Amino acid sequence: MLKHLDKQQQKDYNSALKYKTEKQHNLSIEMYNKILLKDPNNIVYLDELADQYNNLEQIEKSIECYNKIRIIQPANGVNLNNLGIGYFKLKKYETAIEYFKKILLIKNDIPDVYNNICGCYVGLKQYKSAENVLNISFKLREDVDVYFKLANLYFYMKKYEDSITYYNKLPKTSANLYNLSFPYLALDKFKVGFKLYENRLLNNNIHPQTKQKERVEIPQIQNWDGIAHCDNLLVVYEQGIGDNFQYYRFMIELSLKYPNMKISYFCKTLVSNILKPYHNITIKTTDIDIRDFDYKIFIMSLPYFLQIEKITPNVENYIIQNEYKIDYWKKQLSQLKKYKIGFLHNGLLNSFIEKSIPLAEFEKLTDLGLDIDLICIMSDI
Image 1 (cartoon, rainbow, N blue to C red):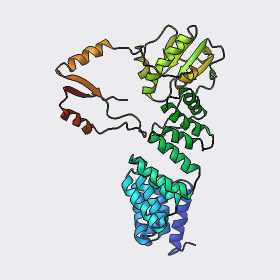
Image 2 (image 1 turned 45 degrees about the horizontal axis):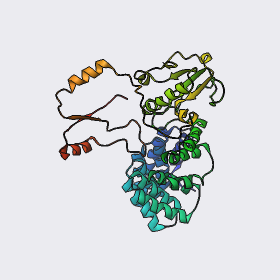
Image 3 (image 1 turned 90 degrees about the vertical axis):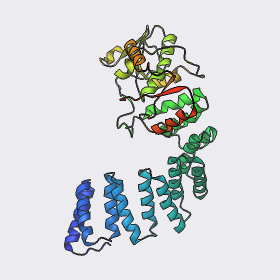
């Protein structure tokens, strides 16, 4: 039982717990800091205060608390793990590994510690090191968590058959089946991959980076199964802007397969401004009347409904060219006499795929003696 210095401290501690229960984290933090003035080396208070900082995603503050505990109890494995997790959240992966390895010096048979170290190596894109520690975890405890980590890791390493093996060991949930689609697609097994990819539609979660739902919900319009007769089909935008540009080619294929079907593409204005409409395709950004449509389909589902088995080079130029902007940029770049190469160095969303490269890295290309002018293309997207 936790002993307090005096009645006031007990009262303040009760208040801290009350505010914690009510999720009034700032008030709880205030009370913890008050009682720690009298008892600064109390590891229970420090640990609970760190937890409150974590609730507010104030990771640096929580690490300060854990470091105070480390000074008092340097061999406290739970606290060392909390420090590792804190530095992991800050993407300070090398430091996180140091703390996780300190735990192994105390006790070296804890699978979760190896799993945590694996996560750090994945963050560093040191996949072989991640595989090594994950195999140790696998020997200590074979369970669905390590299957999932191995499945993901082998996908990152482009060992797609191995990735499929471990995904198939997982429960057949919609999320696991959705993840299984990616190694199949990477192996060009499109019919299987795109069918599995449809499992994404069973959930509509809040995206961790955009903080928005992954797709627009229009429950009043039934989903098309690709078989039922359909005169008016609504195709709905989803996921990233680049995906919608690229998948528009499949909408054109759909229009050729069903020339008598009226197809409406509901998308963002940014997308609509540069896509050409076709004889049975109308592009809409507003004014959707659900009574106009028999069925709907999300644009990323088109390859599945078209039963795509092979991706061939696109020959259809469906991008509208703005003549004013073409003329404008010709004038802007007229002073550049070399071969012009435009590039983007920073993607909109982060993933395991490297979408963000420091601009300074491109400077190395200028040292190769190539007859080129590099043009960094930025946007407000």
